[in-house]
Image (cartoon, rainbow, N blue to C red; front, side, top):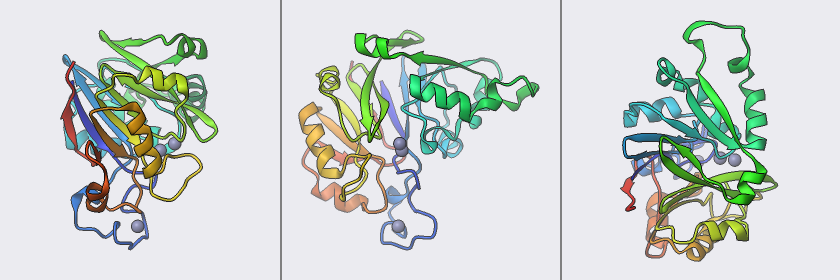
Length: 259
Ligand SMILES: [Zn+2]
Ligand SMILES: [Zn+2]
Ligand SMILES: [Zn+2]
């Protein structure tokens, strides 16, 4: 399984508009962060988690050839507002989209034009919505895209319920501030982990860098990458100070995960 980090930045992206801080003006390309999302390739199956605001640029950069399924973590703008740009992938097919109940409701509202019979032709992405219900989450049921089993992982992002996803030995946990005990159990044995680590200072809805390090230690993956980084965080500084096995993610980061 191949993982590609499409975007590793917080909702503003880095650089942030109208900011001249050290990170926003950094010459290190690792400090250029588009909005958070990833691409997963396994056995010719192509899965994207979140269509970020920067999805078009990310898909062009990584030359994503097709998408078999789309997993949504939650409906915040930075994670879904690139949805319209999946249109080139839906000329010949309809793409299934998976999300929890809360996100599906918001999705239907936010992208109501997709579901209205007001336009014809190629003007809208062709998708089908699939709700990962509360009862399915309680049961610990997996979803399957083209033969690939995916375990949704309930997380708390401040007050709201969001999802992380586990595929085999890899888990992606963006935008979270609490991992419920039951979800820690679902993460047992993960070898490779990407987890939210917004910044050093506390935030009501995101793990800080120390909190993410503690969660990573508890999960015990062999390799962990921090994502959803904001402009308080200089890539090179963070890389130096993190313990062995943890590193900052960056746009274009690719790694393989063993079965
Ligand atoms: Zn976000
Ligand atoms: Zn800045
Ligand atoms: Zn969010």
